[in-house]
Amino acid sequence: MDFELTTEQRLFRDTLRAFVDEQIRPVAREWEAAGRYPDEIVATMRRMGLFGLTVPEEYGGMAADMVSLALVFEEISRGWMGVAGILGSHSLSCWMIARYGTDEQKRAHLPALASGERRTGIALTEPGAGSDLQGIQTTARSEGDGYVLNGRKTWITNARHADPLPVLARTDPAAVPVHAGMSVLLVDAAAPGFEVVRDLPKLGYHGPETCEVVLDEVRVPASALLGGTEGRGLQQVLAALETGRVNVAARAVGVAQEAYDQALRYSGEREAFGQKISGFQAVQLKLADMAMKLQAARLLVYWAASRADSGQRSDMESGMAKVYASEVAMECAATAMQIHGGYGYSSEFTVERLYRDAPLMVIGEGTNDILRTVIARSLTSGRSAIG
Ligand SMILES: Cc1cc2nc3c(=O)[nH]c(=O)nc-3n(C[C@H](O)[C@H](O)[C@H](O)COP(=O)(O)OP(=O)(O)OC[C@H]3O[C@@H](n4cnc5c(N)ncnc54)[C@H](O)[C@@H]3O)c2cc1C
Image 1 (tube, helix red, strand yellow):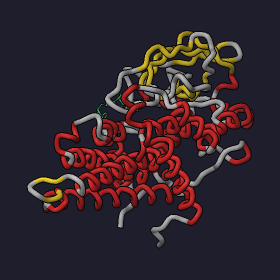
Image 2 (image 1 turned 90 degrees about the vertical axis):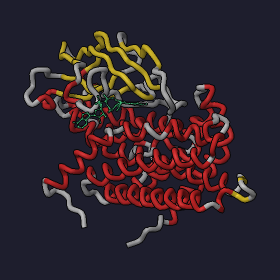
Image 3 (image 1 turned 180 degrees about the horizontal axis):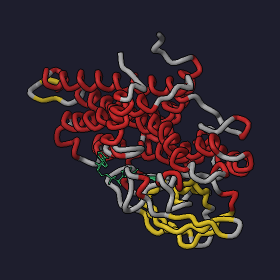
Image 4 (image 1 turned 90 degrees about the horizontal axis):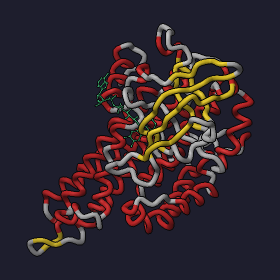
């Protein structure tokens, strides 16, 4: 058993940390508050090859192991979680195209997506269906030598930059079971009838846009059907969400680490009653709890990532990592704010942003309630065991 990163992973983390310190931290507060898109940061991430994290090397990607992927999301989220969102659904869909796409689809999309010349996202959620993806209403009816899509997607991150945008739709609305009639279509952003209609106002997670998308008689060729066979869509996105959970869990670790760092630093500077507040046992207990839970969350994330790297099924592990790390992030953000006293409530201090960003990780890539049911199903069915 070895709890250390490999030499390559440590060097990779050092490179990421330097990038975050030099280019993200200095601008995060101002750009986040202004709602400014971080174009310059995106340009550097392109140069670093980060848009190709989950793309095989033969298509120009990095083909990173899952632990390295976790390091990317953790380190970037220490500086500004929103920036990690620009890579999140992009990496998820690149993984999905690499895993399930036809050779033609891989050749057509992956090289440009790996370089960041083109970008992508994932369109699953609808106004009437989020957790219950079998309840989506978007349809893709077969017509001529292609499909015609109609529907409305909501909460779609990176929608204004995605081309193509993978859209989950019902190719056979009468299919029983429902998922046997669901497919993913790779929709060209320039297709007539495809429109990003609105940027949704958000509590946090500023940086990337999160939008409502309308599909009105959008025609796509048959070659846009992911994998070339209808009825595989739900299975494809659920598998991709498993890798997405490692990314969200790692973001939570990054946010929790930053909350802890800020609290530790501030408690060593702030004085009350003639001493540093870090001298008060009540503050020390908070710091100790944060550090313990943060480290436990990190180990859970690396464990889930290593498990995925070993080729074993990891839905329970990635679920556990995502649920636990996101709840630790919420707790650490709130505690760090408390340790900052009134200043923690000020938008001039970082902890206020962490407090707004942390809840997204509880919701995204499967809510924690849903994931608890996934974990329980895995245990009660005997597919997984603990101990
Ligand atoms: C900032 C942001 C960015 C997002 N980006 C994307 C994106 O890029 N692409 C995309 O497709 N989606 C995206 N989403 C949507 C996100 O995936 C959904 O919000 C999430 O899956 C939950 O779906 P919902 O909002 O419809 O909630 P619902 O499914 O309506 O759930 C509401 C509540 O009921 C609970 N609940 C529902 N069913 C059950 C059950 N069976 N058992 C127990 N509890 C249950 C949930 O846990 C939750 O607490 C984003 C959301 C946000 C907020």
